[in-house]
Structure formats: C-alpha cells, structure tokens
Amino acid sequence: MQKKSPNKNLNRVSRLKVEEADELLNFLLKNIKDKTRNKVKGMLARKQFMVNDKIIRQFDHALKVGDTVKVSWDKPFRELSYQGVKVVFEDDDIIVVDKKSGLLSISSGNTKMQTVYKTISHHIQLDDPTAKLFVVHRLDKDASGLMVFAKNKNSQVSLQKDWDRTIANRKYLAVTQGTMENDEGKIVNYLKENKALMMYVVASKSDEAKLAVTHYQVIKKNEFYTLLEAHQETERKNQLRVHMKSLGHPIIGDKKYEATENPIGRLALHLKQLAFIHPTTKKEVIFETKVPDDYLKIFRSRFYQ
Image (cartoon, rainbow, N blue to C red):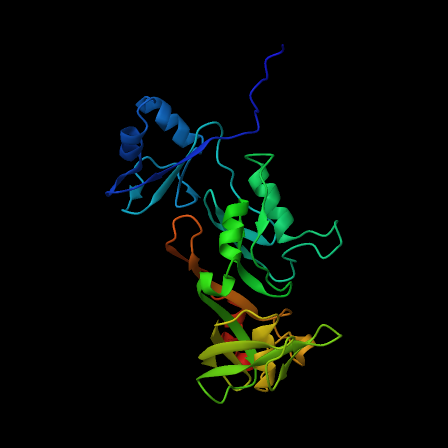
C-alpha cells in the first residue's frame, strides 16, 4: 500500500500567552525548547512569528502581559491584504473583520459576486484547504465596519443561540442630515417590512412588527450634518437607518430611506464596536475601529462650516 504524503498545504500554528513582560527573542527561547537560538532567529527573519496578529521580525520587540504570540511552524505568516476587508482578530473559533462600504456580507444568489464570506473563506483555506467558515450575522452592503464569523459549527451555534444577549455592546457611527435637536436620546418603537422590502415604523407589536430600541449620542455637529454614536439594544433590519429617518434626520447617502445628500459618495453608517461573549472562553471580548476619515472630513472642510 502506498504511503500517504503529508498535506503540504497545512500549516501548524501555536499560540503562546505572555504572562510577564519580556523581549520577544528571550520569550521564544524560554517557550520553544527544541529550537536553537540561531533557528529561532531564522524563524524571526522568515516572518514565522506574530504578536497580537501582527508579524514581528525584531528580536528585541517588547512584550506586555496579556500579549499573544503566534508561531507558524511550517511556513511564514502572510501579509494580509484583501480588497475591502481587513482581518482584525483570529483564533481557533472566530475571526473578526472590518469591511468597507459596498461589499456584500454573503452572496445574494449571484455566485460570481465577491463577498466578505468568500474573501475570508479563501483566507482560512490558505492554511487548511478543508476549513469552513460559518455566518454569525450580516452587515448591510452599503454599511462599513466590524463583522464576526465562526470557524466551526459549535462556535456558530453558541454565538447565534441568542445573538442579542451574546452581544454585550455594539456601537455604530453615523452621519445624518441636518443638526440634531437633542445631543442624546432613546428611540423605542416597532419595525415592520413591506412588500418592497423597506422597513417602517408601526405603532404596536405584531407577528411581523418587532421591537426596536436605539440609544444615540451626538459626537460632533455643524449647520449641515451631525456625527453620532448609536447603541442598539436590538438588531433589526436597517434599524438605525429607519430610526434616523423617523427623527427627520436620515443618514447621508441613504437614498432608500429618503436622504437627499451624499457628500462622501456612500452610506455614512459604520459598525464601530463589537463586544460579545467568546463562544469557547465565555469571556467578554471587545473589538473597535476608528472613525472613518471621510466622516471627519465633512466637519473639517470649510465648505460645510
């Protein structure tokens, strides 16, 4: 019987937790007992180590308590650069990404169209061609920001079992038309979908109408626009978009919900922060992105002031 050759596409990756401050090379020599100093330095040069998901080649890189060091035993880590998607965090159970506006989360029937799901599936299959990606939630095509996917079925089930409760916090950034009258507020109503797939506000709950709760706080405003941060207790389709329209301040670029202005050429809706219970460790994890530059340009530009 012919002996099977090892799968050359597979790559073994180990994770080491830093428990006391140290320099990277010293830490590696303490934790990798079967490699000589020269071999470890060679692995550093070949980009086989990451600290907090960033490739590090400097032997004297300072490590802090709580840092995570990844070791790629078989081949160098890749410099990750995907069009429209950035990997923010990855472990054995989940992968968190930051997506740009205009990219679908998952396929809507057109198999040739590029999606976040396809891009990240390709990413995890570079290390293991048999790896599968599992959808946890979606983000509107025209919105940008954070998304989390599961890397195994158990993690998907754990996260999706009660998504609204699993999520400890989710914060959106949005730029709306006009100057908001109140600097903070809470919106509570019921949302229903019509035959044209548009969501709208109704007075009471029904089988089709679901409770929607949004808290918002103004960050910056001028005579023409308002930048706000919103926290949703619920996650209904187009929730923040409909709620802003109901206040008479639709999100810029949101033609679907009656916006008439689009100074940045896209929908100004960004999922800035996700905090949720990790499916395996059962501890809260928090991920955050910065305010998109084009949002801030609206308030820096003389044209709008």
